[in-house]
Image (cartoon, rainbow, N blue to C red; front, side, top):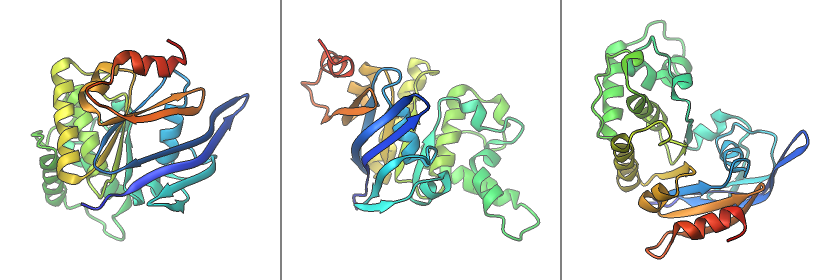
Length: 248
């Protein structure tokens, strides 16, 4: 499959009194599971929001397949197949709508054109097919208010990949999940990498999970990238922690 790359070159962001990112160079290609790690305030979420179009006030350049692109809004990012699923799943879903309506929400809101009526049979069919791409079986007629947190997360991932998705960013995805639910998420993530050549980026603090699921990782500290390296059988938790803290 064709490899697509996404990255930044000397990207910086300043908030009042704080330099959240400082000349960050970062690159990832499709077909990998990659962790972005660092202590609180290291800049990892800020960087991912730049790539998702949610932090428009950056300086520097964002590169897509080596070409400079402007990601000043989420629509521009989504057009390039960059999607982000935040930790607060309940804030992103409409509980009074069905699974199908939540999966297909972007189409229902943005792509109606001059149509006056919603074809609910088609909405349910498309949602079911998208969930099947994840090998997830959830009744698309159920209200989202009746789902578990893990099921809600799958609905959001289905929404993210419903159209072309090359880069899927997951913000602390395992934080609300049990061990069993985490294993199911990992199964879905591996499936997306292997069957759809997707890059899945984890923002996480959980080092044991990084060693279990990821192909590589980036460590950030004080708004800068400290290191990006593959994960091998020799990679240890201590090695990662030392990079995160800047000391042994």
